[in-house]
Length: 293
Ligand SMILES: [Fe+2]
Ligand SMILES: [Fe+2]
Image (cartoon, rainbow, N blue to C red; front, side):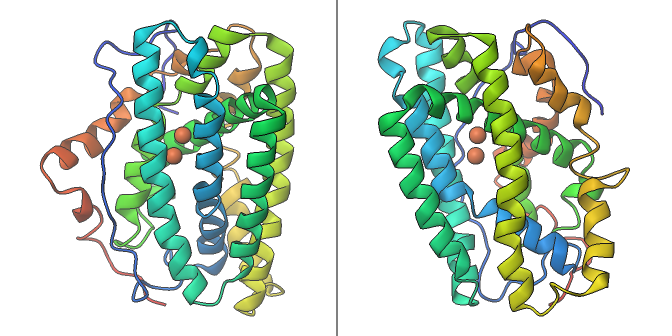
């Protein structure tokens, strides 16, 4: 991991920049768009498509406490966080719509359930909702860190239609990684509730992702194929796996003095920011070998 430890403050250049982009994910995009591999592709299909209802839940959870925030800087960050998550939600819904047209209809039903449960939780348990949000934002921050610090493993194998979405979302997740946490520290800040929330969120993610992936793999007739699992499981849980590599980063959350900006990984955003400013965000991945369905 390239991150270094530093005090609990973002770099002085820190700014949350909402970037309103539309990506080129269409019905013509390859079916197995990540490394030409069904398991890896469906892992990301299952994960990415939780974002439309999931990130709307995050925004509602944070906005609920906006009236209690007196710091004008954090107020502005809440606005920028909400705008970024709104864009993410919309772009991942575009991907979801393509998958629905391809016949992966289980995701629609599951997302309706997530949306209903999320709205219910926001109404009945606003503090638990905020706690889940900051725990899950830690997950998105560490996975984004992984994707941008080792793109050859976790971002570049994506087809050129998807690679810009990957890098754009990862960069913005790093930019706003502390917003939900800072809101919680402003209105409550107790240690044990956030630990319980992290344990619950970890178990929830480990449960929900296989549940979402199973019908996708089954539809493609690869659920019971040894090759699917032999290629796929090391990608997540092997020595260089997406979930195993950042375990130290993950564990930092359990420290009493944790703050998301203990990991100063703002430098990882630089590439995306630079090409965005040049108006070339969608050209990420254009020069590499194209995978096929
Ligand atoms: Fe997001
Ligand atoms: Fe986020």
